[in-house]
Length: 147
Image (cartoon, rainbow, N blue to C red):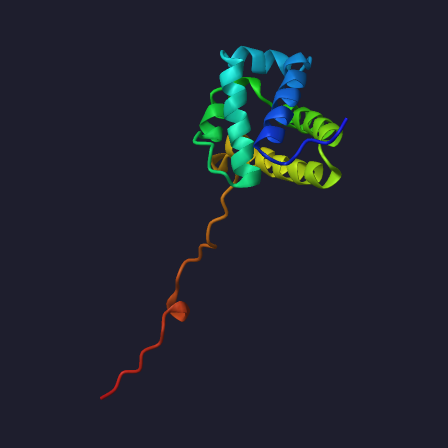
């Protein structure tokens, strides 16, 4: 099979093939199938997303973080790994090696950003404060008293 082109048509075909695999995947399928009511509409949105990310087309107008946060109780970091593995397999099969590498790199960065947004909480981390000391007379600036 000839590799798909890195254009809107090729990205749409890639997205369609990839999400057919996601929907059939034992781990990912139930989550995606439960979350997506209108697959044709969602696939068009995802194709616009990848067009914007890879081709800088500006076609995507959504907000990925809030969209994923709605499903935070069902999404784990391990599922991101599964998604990325399936993405790598699909892009390796359908794209040229340089295109597959570019798509995989971008997907890994996006997954990392989403995971940080979804799972990293500053309020759960100890926050180092400045060292506290009690001031004494030796810490105060010395003023000279001029006559």
